[in-house]
Image 1 (cartoon, rainbow, N blue to C red):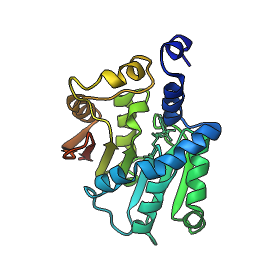
Image 2 (image 1 turned 90 degrees about the vertical axis):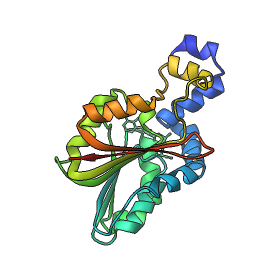
Image 3 (image 1 turned 30 degrees about the vertical axis):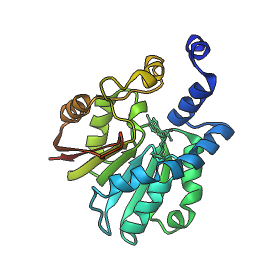
Image 4 (image 1 turned 60 degrees about the vertical axis):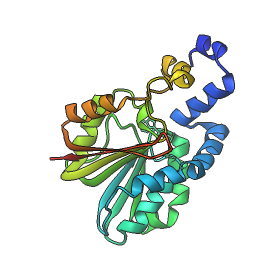
Amino acid sequence: MDKKNVEKNNVKDIKFIENARKPEGDLGDKILNRMNFSHEQLARWVCSHLTIDEGDYILDIGCGGGVNVDRFANKVAPNGKVVGIDYSKVSVEKTKNRNKKAIQEGIVDVLEGSVSKMPFKDNYFDLITGFETIYFWPDFVNDLKEVNRVLKKGGTVCFGNEVRYEDGQMDKYKEWMDGSYMKIYTDDELQSALLQAGFEDIELNKKDGENWICIKATKI
Ligand SMILES: C[S@@+](CC[C@H](N)C(=O)[O-])C[C@H]1O[C@@H](n2cnc3c(N)ncnc32)[C@H](O)[C@@H]1O
């Protein structure tokens, strides 16, 4: 943690954002419980842009409290598979607890690991999602290349964020961004990163009256 930045900022906010970036300990556990509820409307809206079929293989990166893994498992069962990956031990535990039955049935797997290097074969998943997580990825274009590697040709990648970059509206996030706690991308930056990573057919959706974004792309 950058001490100078913490002194300059409200410590509670910094602790909160650090735990959103990588949940740890009791505070991380509480924040994940809260996110399972507070992100629900965003997640439903994002999912309304997705087509999910029985038998699909889905990867949810930064799976947090595991609510989206649960949602997807119900749609792909009995022949599909949902894998949740997260570099936070607490997130992995929460996702495992929430999906115990589906894990026993072989529909769900949950792994501790970083988006930057994932233990999956090339061309493996039909759909890869990330909800409220790309702000925290360490090397966005290269991380997207890793996502591209494990996605099947013709497969879809989809990210949902409840904070969108808007000119004149970014002061409230400035300290978090300056402190490298998170990065909020402009629409152009998101599209350009996806193109650089080899994706095509980029579709960007914004929700009326909210600051939400749902960005989808295809591996050709
Ligand atoms: C704000 S939480 C969102 C959790 C969940 N997706 C949701 O919508 O409620 C961000 C999650 O992304 C995970 N995360 C952040 N950077 C990551 C990385 N580089 N690799 C894997 N997981 C990451 C964090 O550990 C955390 O669980």
